[in-house]
Length: 210
Image (cartoon, rainbow, N blue to C red; front, side, top):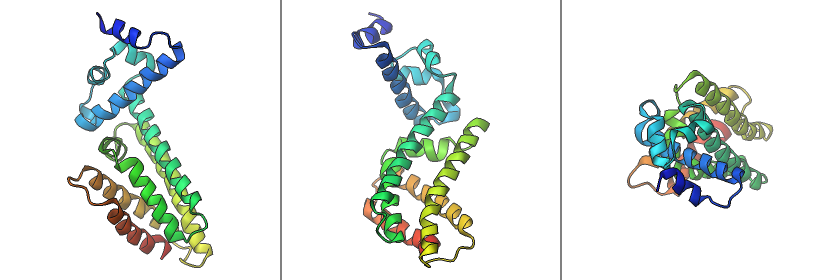
């Protein structure tokens, strides 16, 4: 029995759109695994297809190449993380800025850092992968900066911090948080999440809302 027949039987009876969505999801999951394991520069469409159990023809029906897969995968990881952080911050909107930062930090770590593959791809492999990827990454960085700046502006309004150098402080803490999240995600054994959040909270409060 051929691999194509096996895949066809697995999805027998499903609408074409559902089959395409599931196939695309399998490529994204395999891209996550292969990019994290081999590194984007050393990866190949063949390796991704083997991990997914699908053919290169099926791959190119979904993506124009590895770059397109990486960009979509990065966007998916970041969107999920940003939604989680935004939800945590909204839920604690009535709390102090420091407590809002605490909730957002925890949500970010849990979203990206809990899966070492996501942390590797989103924080390491996308950097300098291509000019298109870099444009996408810089836009995402601006989006994160805007979200974090909203907390900082509230602290400014409350008189907790001066308004000067706000953008520089936001940029600095973003880089620091990402380094910590990546190191935590690949550490064996991992330190307790509560401890990491507490350490990051001290740094973020000192830089933005102290």
